[in-house]
Picture 1 (cartoon, rainbow, N blue to C red):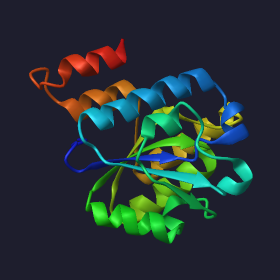
Picture 2 (picture 1 turned 180 degrees about the vertical axis):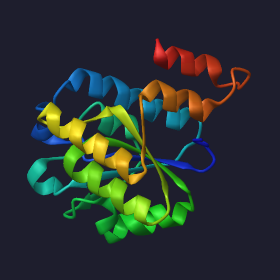
Picture 3 (picture 1 turned 45 degrees about the horizontal axis):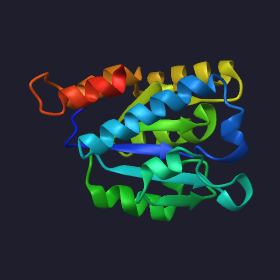
Picture 4 (picture 1 turned 90 degrees about the horizontal axis):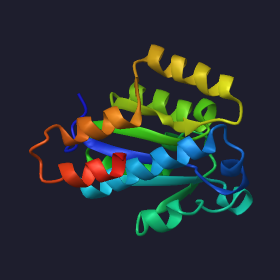
Length: 179
């Protein structure tokens, strides 16, 4: 089960023109915002990446502003784990669980999930907060990640798993995010 004290949200490569052409972009953006706000509300650390930002552009708005002080680590490797700065930051957090969100599902999200699983990290992929240009690529990658051991769940399931209890003081704020 997902535990907010053991989890980190990994925000992968939501940037530039590539972000603009994602399949079901509105659904993607809505769920990305919910997960970011929930992580902030519950003090779950966030690590962000940008794939070759000098070519693909910076993190898209409104996420750049919403993420505020979260460093966006530039990378060339498709897997976040292939970048030394990401690996160092992730290891410094000493977390055992990773929630993956971002683009593209069948490239950077997939490769990151596989690498983290190989490191013994418990991987959760927010199925409705990842996307690809072609819907079939997203579906196939989600299936492959599940087959490799990742938990593929909807955003709302992950939000409530992080919260765990309606008696939590953050419950009302979380409900406002969902509605």
